[in-house]
Length: 392
Image (cartoon, rainbow, N blue to C red; front, side, top):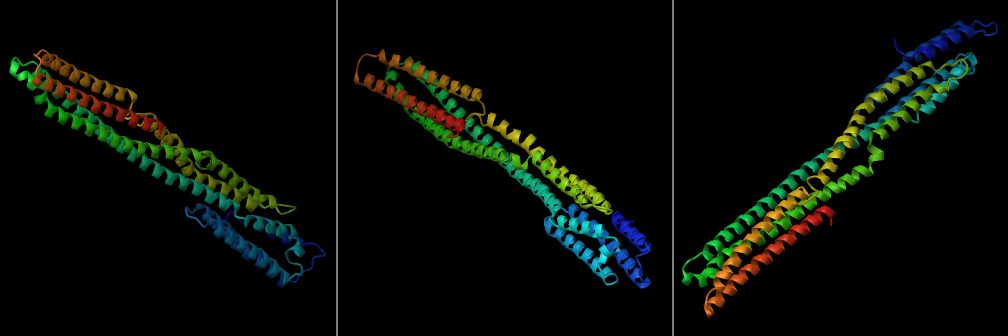
């Protein structure tokens, strides 16, 4: 048996009671016509309640229009019942003691036609869908940023590693040539170091370009994270779980308020029951949406904060890593300069002649070229890290 026939049952009882009054004469055929009209309304009216609850269970949109359509059918049913009774008794429902029933039903169906409950249900779904869409985008962007940032870090690490290895070889070569015991070989020290040094300088310059390029790439990924973090913060009040709870409370309150149309001997019992069922469905609808909203702000958002303060806080993931790379580069540079200095002392020990001066000039140029290339690399590292940290 339907849960939504109590008001019709009460109306039927009131009508039967009305007919027992001495001054309420009624032909048998009219009594049967009215009773038949009331009985017919039982199932039709109950079906509308069931249909509206099914609307609330749907996951799609267009809830509002379908809800209003059901309310229009409810109003048509009520007015049709009144017209059917009017054909038997002048004055319709009000003339047979059901004036409160008619007025209350009319008031509630008209209020319910605003579709506030359905609108709140749609709003819950829309917030949940927005959270889902946003989570998908944010997680995809975060994954790409982590992968891209990791690739950039590794490319820079490998490039600087190659630079240090080449500088180490240059140091060994300079030490080897400076240790020669053949005086005739001393003027050739710079000449023998020049070509390998030129290749080392090319590696250093290449490392500088690689650092600049990968630094820009990583900064670009960080910009995506920064923009997405701001977006999450900007929509917090609209998409967090509190927003869903607020809409839920409004929807439940509106559903419960439908029974307020009760007056006199019209109790609106079915509407009270209907309000409770609407509340259950709204709560069920909100649960997955709340879970997604909480996931967005308790999992995804913190992951962005962690990324921005962790792997994207510095060019080499952390300031400590970057400092270590710089220190290692400085160490290899000092070793090269020390080896070149020793070579220079060996050359300066020669008696003055054009060959000695040429060797000295070649060695000095090698040192200056290496120093300039290393300075550019260190400046590039500094600029790239500064841009990454400040977003400039």
